[in-house]
Structure formats: C-alpha cells, structure tokens
Length: 182
Image (tube, rainbow, N blue to C red; front, side, top):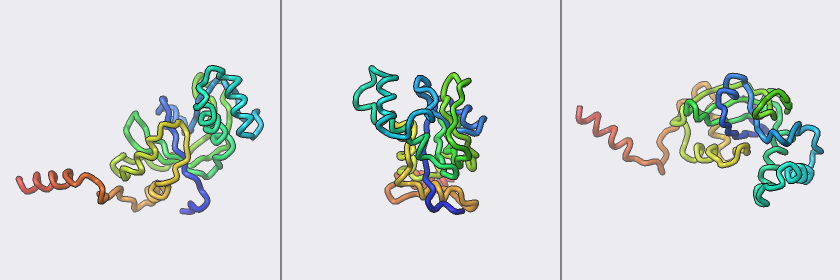
C-alpha cells in the first residue's frame, strides 16, 4: 500500500451515522457558508470567522478558522482519515475520495468530502497513544505521532495492538490467574 506523502487526518462528529452511512466526512460551522468561495488565505479565513462569529473568544479564532482552512485547502484526495465513532466505539479508517464540496441542503455539517471507509476496528486494536491522539479536543486535525500505526492497521494481516511496555500489566496477570484457577 503506497502511503508515502499521504496525510492522516482525524475527525469527530456528533452524527456518526451521517459519516458511516453516507460515506463522507463533514464539518459544521453552517453560518460560514460555502468555504470554497473564501480566498485561500488563513488570514482571510480568520477575518470571515470573526465577521460570522463576532462573539467568538479571541483564542478560538485561529484554531477554528485553521480547521476550516485545512479541511478545504490542505486535505487531498488519497489522504487517509481516522474517525473514532462514539456510536459503536470503533476506529474507522477511510480514504478521501473527493475534493471539498458544500451541501446547501444539509441542516448540519454542510462542508463535506466523500470517503471510502476501508476498515472498522475495535479501539482495543490500537495503542493508548494512538487513541489519545485521535481523542483530540479539536473537530478536525492532522494525526502526526501515530499515523504509522493507522497505516499498519490497513494491512490485511493486521492483528491489532500487542500489550505495550507501559500498558497496565495487571490485566494480563488477572487473565492468567483466571486461567490457572480453572
């Protein structure tokens, strides 16, 4: 699998079925409208964000505007996306299949991209570090530290996470004690 020069993105939503049933990823900020009509400049995105949300906290402006900018201008077709679902507690991994598009008929999450979901794995298949990284407080973000772990999960022979040295070994010890008691 060619993953060189591919980015892994993480995303969260309050509407898991939207992502999984319609094969897409999406972000909200409905009041911003069609993000593709905003000039491809981070500063212009910040200006539009301030004009749209005049009561926004000063510290949240660059973060929110940056997420919007990245979703439209930095994500590429062929990049990967990791979506931790709250609905079924799985880690969903997909590949971005479309450019950004705006769905004016969507009541929520009108800013979208098509995705082909490749795998739906239990959270237990991943290291604690990988889970923490995709547990980001941001709605949309780049996965940097554990991107390789998500790429490995796409291999057909992927077996999941083996206990890491810093993992709580009492779980394995307790399991061994149960086996010995039987």
